[in-house]
Amino acid sequence: MRLVPLLLVVGATALAAQAKPRPRALGIPFNGTPGPLNAITDVTGVEVGQVTLIEGQGRLRVGRGPVRTGVTAIFPRGRRDGRPAMGAWWTLNGNGEMTGTTWLQESGFLWGPVLITNTLSVGVVRDAVIDWAVRRGYDDFLWALPVVAETYDGGLNDIKGMHVTREHAFQALDAAKGGPVAEGNVGGGTGMVCNGFKGGIGTSSRKLSVEAGGFTVGVLVQCNYGGRRRFSVAGVPVGAQITGADNCVALPDPSEPWLRDEPRCDAPTRGDRESGRTELGSIIVVLATDAPLLPHQLQRLAKRVALGIGRLGGIGGDSSGDIFVAFSTANAGAAAPDSAVTVQMWPNDRINPLLEATVDATEEAIINAMAAAETMDGADGYRVYALPMDQVVALLRRAGRIQ
Image 1 (cartoon, one colour):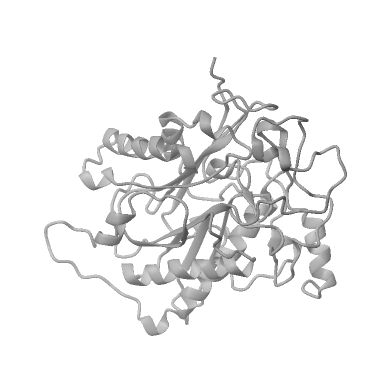
Image 2 (image 1 turned 90 degrees about the vertical axis):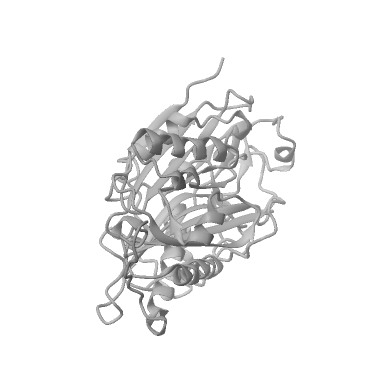
């Protein structure tokens, strides 16, 4: 009998349980000025909806659980506005999937929302977006090429059980709204691991000065990449110095072979925090801006996402899928099908503040995801610890990065 997962439908409004302070409130230094929400929804029109699936515990039984997964949906212009947005994509390392990118690159337009889920649920979520659009009267055939991306949550989640359904994707799409965005163990990020600690969904934004154009850049990440050894915050290599948060396995005889080499939770740590799994995983980054950028300029922003990841120690390892998509909410009528249109383009000579904002917002979004995430026990009793922010703050204070 197939279990029915606990379903949490999350709009942009943060869950009440997520009361942990964000890193900026702890004094961790970040460059740039955030928007009011410090979220991708600071870009006017952007809406986010999420569905979180959590059920079961103990030994992995394919098709039964434990379940630790979900879906995250991001609409460039909100779920009631089907007009496409100029967009582009870029990949740092391609061991991952993002559907719809061929047409995105060819046309320069993002048609519909971006959805993120786990690796084996890309197909059902992709089909669900098409069905959702048809049911709501978006009958343009270009909606048949939706952008759906993934990261792998098979460490904590019964990923082969494929518990995400078409209805879950519908619920994430219908839940989308503006406002604060839930972070950590939510949506597509529910079962993810980032830089050796619990990862998930994170977001941040930057508001440019009036002199720089006054634009907003917003970023949302699903972080599941990286190893602990290189992980740095504010230039301090905290990953190698954190103690007492080594991931482990609670069951004596886990069914997954790779878990048999992991430390046991009831045994002393062996001091190998990487546990043989350095740089496994992926990161999906969705970037939004209201700056009037053309597709080739948006790709320039998408490339700079990699610099934000690199600040934290990411290298785009061989087994990582680091894939980024960027869109602009400006030039709303640019895809008119039957007439020539006039569009605005921000000068390349003035694009540097937008590039800088991209790097800064990406860096903070990843830290926000890790700081919001909670320690999770998943399939076969695999336990992934949350980033201990008290140790991070102490290490940064010792290094003189927090006064």
